[in-house]
Image 1 (cartoon, rainbow, N blue to C red):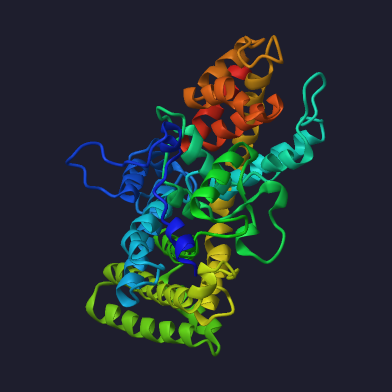
Image 2: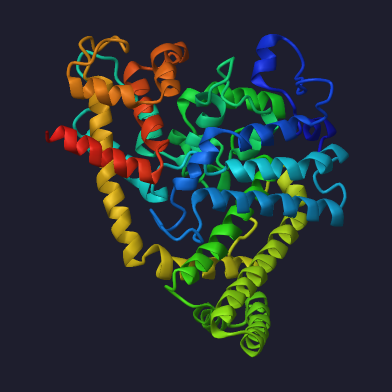
Length: 479
């Protein structure tokens, strides 16, 4: 591991400081003693996209039970797990992040990227992503990418929409769409932006090879210059994740594989005893699963002996969450230590919770249980269907508002209908400004920027807002 490269991995540079021609300065006054990475966390914590996640689906769309997780509570838990794992590693193996500087800042950066990792997800979670992709696939047959009389969108750029990905939208939100004086989004450090990039290739190259960082699109063409800047500042290249990204990914995996099951228990879809029976049945010779199942059996017996049936249900769910998270945290931290060299020289390519490890097999089994009993539950599937119908119509209507102009070549031209004008006015000022004023500087086809304005608006909606707006616009459309 080269010392210079390791130093670059903790770059405090910001794009705004580059254009001001000075070194990054992260103090707002003489009393501000926060580090640049603490500034990043605070900027993110108080941002609008974070608050929006309170009404975005984790597993159960439009859930009325306040005890069931939203995308926001999921992200808080991922951030907490990530910070905790960072501290665990630093305290048990000093120097694990390559330098004293890495040990000092690693837990803070992990908390930040844990909080940020799902910001770009559209309403209704992965089903929302799927619906956006389906919409563009259907429209591509009607030559939406190659409109008559306008410059078309070449094939490599079309993948940004045909393979629309929440992770790529996250980078766009952080680096572009949020309001700042210089137009740099939240203007986060190069290190934080690098670490939040779970995937490192553009859409046209994604899905090729065994490298986990190339599995899905990591950024859109509109953010290619941001990615180039991040790589110049950190020394990273395409296909190379920031070392902390492996831990952030593991924390996300731990959170949803365990806590989505806990939510199914809270909704009385399954019981803690059902999960325990499943673990016993699937354990076979897996020492990790056998150990967890045996410990949980003792825990459950204790709960039954000392609590009422109602209290015992809560206690058992708590035991289940605690034991499973601890087992997976141990797996992830052990894997990070074992593969430290490969992670820092960028030869490592598989997730820390790889299914070939004992703890990784536990993770895969929990995912399978959640898929059968939570993700495919009729109440989830029904609401996801209603959400998909709403999103499809909203995409149609906003596309009309964006493109049905008196002068097709002029983004500022008046819309041809009152309905189109109304729908276009509903789009966020930030997003319209990016489309009308700033997008041209990136030298992208107008049709591409129209599509991006559409995905910016729709992916930024919350579940409840999308359903309410759908009902309102459908009423207006039929009036």
